[in-house]
Structure formats: structure tokens, C-alpha cells
View (tube, rainbow, N blue to C red):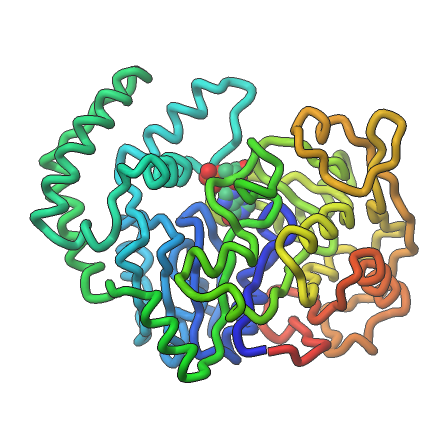
Length: 422
Ligand code: IMP
């Protein structure tokens, strides 16, 4: 395949960054297509740690063309901060149709959350929801307008007035137009040289038969349409959203690699049927370093849930699975995998659309033997202990998708490709 998308199959944080970083070595182009700096992952290169939130994962490789496509919402301050940390040469293009996150967006994000009380979503407070809300309400500010001084001035003036009214309803401090304009005009100057029509660019690159990796942020269960609504983000992390959010034809995406942890995690609120607590959850959280890259929040822990993976396969499409953090399960006597749910005494094999029903489902489990030997240095599927091989095979059979890759540690050389699909 020459054009693939890497999607998270769960609630985000599946280790997409590591898989993308690995596959990016074989790519000519890496494209971020949705979300903003609510995402985050760490890449370690030559012992130097880089935290990427907005920039595509190919940014540290001078040969890769990086694209921030129209489906993204970009916070210019975060963009400039992240860019200033990249000390090696890079190639970057930013869509003139992507939307801009402005200072009132995080403030409104927080205000909406506070107003919801116990029903809060648990957002990252980065202003993502309010920025997408403005896009849909047709009052958003796009990159192309942002980098034009005159147009930015007039749009921002009107927007700050409007948003100050909204902030006053939530009893929040008001914003000063002049100071935002002065500060953000500087960010616009930094961004301007990278701005273009990335749809045209991508179509040209496809004509040239370049290998393209579309890099999803978050995970399919956080999809606005197919996720656990309302506990979702405000964009679609599915493979299906790539064409719309990048401006290419749907049939040009040749496959999707679904990244799944060997177990499940979630940050933020909302149901999680296979959630575990206590000592075992603590062990997995510490062993797997399960703390959010963007917010530092401890992640909730659960067993692997194949109803979720089949749902992801259904709504997004999965060509292969990439199973991450397999090493974290080493030493656990018995491993559980969710095979189906029970709802009101009935066995079901789907995610109920209504969150109140999803909160009530009870998982049915299959129990598998664990393994004791250290797998962090294995270099192939064949070197795995038989119980670990069995664990992967069972997942593959239950989901109906081949395992294309797995990883046994944070380093690039701890990612193993079983099938050379890209
Ligand atoms: P928002 O995207 O900040 O609006 O947050 C909405 C929901 O998505 C919350 O539950 C967040 O914790 C979750 N979320 C957003 N981005 C990520 C991510 O990159 N990883 C995991 N969860 C995320």
C-alpha cells in the first residue's frame, strides 16, 4: 500500500505516535488531518525527547514532507512554541483552510465544562470543541484569513466582541482585542511561509506516486459521530474522515492500520466497560507509564475489549492491527479479553448508541494464560513465548483482522513488523 492511515482503535493514547514514527521512516509524506493540540506523543531520537502535539510525526526527518491539513484546528501560539523546538531542517505545509484556535476558545472550553458539573466531558481545555463549534457555525477564522493582516484585523475585532458577550454570560473575564491582535499577528508572520492549498499539494504528490501516511489523532471511540457521544472529541479520527479533511478522493486511501494497546486505557469521563481498579490497574498504569502526554492525567485502565475493536473495524475499516505495549502484560497470570456485552439480560455484540445504555453494559470475558518471560528484546513474532503468540492470535481471530505489527517497548527497535504492508 502506498497511502495508508494510522488510526487509534480505542479512546486515544494507543501508541499511534510510535507506530507512525516507525512507519514514517518508509514514507515520503506525513499528514495530520484532524484535531489540534489536544493530541500528544513523545518521540525519542538520539536520546533527545520531543513532545509533539500539533506538528506531524515526520517533522524530525528532513526528507519527509509534513502537511497539516484542512481538518485540523491550529492554536498559533502552540504551533510557534512547538516549531521553535525543532532544531533540524524540516519540510512543512499548513492548509489555508484549517481553522485557528484563538484565546477565547480554551476559556469557553473551560466555562462549558464547569457549567456541566458532574456531567463534564473531561476535555483537554485546549479549546478544541469551541473552535470546531465556530467552524460549523460558520464564524471560524481560517488560516488563510489569519495570515492576511487586514482581514485578520477585521475578523478578529468582530469575533472578540461576539465572544466577550458569550464570556460575560459565563461570568468570565473579558478579552482585549488590541493585545490579542498584536500578539497573534506575530504568530501569523511565523506561520505564513508554510501556508498553501494542501489539497492541491497532496493531489500533486499522489500523482508523483509518493508514499503517504495519514496520521490520526485521538481514537475512533472519541469520534464525534461513531464514538461514545457525548464523551468524545469534536472531530472524526476515523479513516473515513481522511478524504474530507485533506481534500483527496476517498478511493485514494488504500488501507488503515488500527493501533490498539494490548489492553485498554481512557482519560476523561464516560463509560469503559472493561475498566479495572486496584492493584492490577496500578501495576499496569505504572508499568505502561499511563499518564496523559498533554494533561499529565492518570489514565483509566481496562482489559482489551474486542467489541470496541469490531466497532472500529465496522465504522472506520481496518486493514491490519498494530498491537502496542504487549510487554506491559508480562508477568500477569491470567489475561482477560472482552468478547461481548450483556445488556438487560441479552448478549450483544455492538456499542449501544445511547450513552445511558452503554453505561449499563456488562462485559463477557475470555480468560487466557499470561507469560512470564521478558519479551522486550524479541525481534520477531516467532521469538514470542507461546502464550503471547496465542494472545495475539486470539485478538486477530476475534476481530477478524491480521496483526501487522506489535511493539514491546518505547524504542523504535522494539516495534516489530510482521507483514510488510507499507
Ligand atoms: P477535547 O478533544 O479536548 O475536546 O476532549 C474531549 C475528550 O477527548 C476528552 O475525554 C479528552 O480526554 C479526550 N481526548 C482528546 N484528545 C485526546 C488524546 O489525544 N488522547 C486521549 N484522549 C483525548
